[in-house]
Length: 144
Image 1 (cartoon, helix red, strand yellow):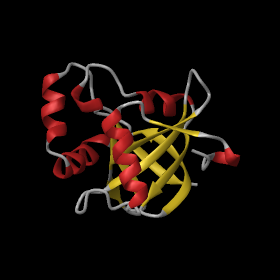
Image 2: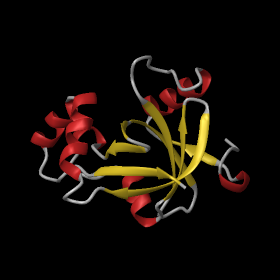
Image 3: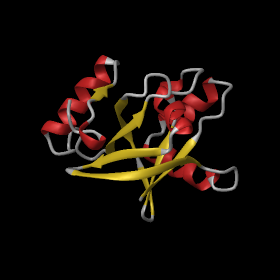
C-alpha cells in the first residue's frame, strides 16, 4: 500500500487476523470495533528498513496515546516495539486522521498509572503479564 512517508510502500502485519483488522479499520474510518480504541501504528522495520503497519488498542493520557507491547502474552516483545526502539519516529492513524509521532517506552516512574489505564481498557493485559517473565513495556506516543 502506498500511503507511507514520502510515498513509501507500507507493509501490513504478516499476522492474518491483524491484517484483516487493518483492512476493516481502513474501510470503516477507524471504527472496526465500535467501543474499542484502536489505532494503526506504522514503524520502520529495524532489519528491512521498510514501513510496517499494525493495529493496536490504545489509551489516552491527555494528548498522549498509550500502548502496551503485550504481543498477546508471548514471551518476546512484538516486532513493532523492537522497531520503534530502533527508530522512534512513527506514523499513527486514529479514526481518519493520520499524523507523525514519536514513540518511547514509559519510564519506571511513568509506567504504573499508565499500566493501570491499559488494563482498565484491556483486562487481558494483566493476565498476559502474570503468564510471562518479561515485563510488558508501556509505550507513550506523542504527536510531533
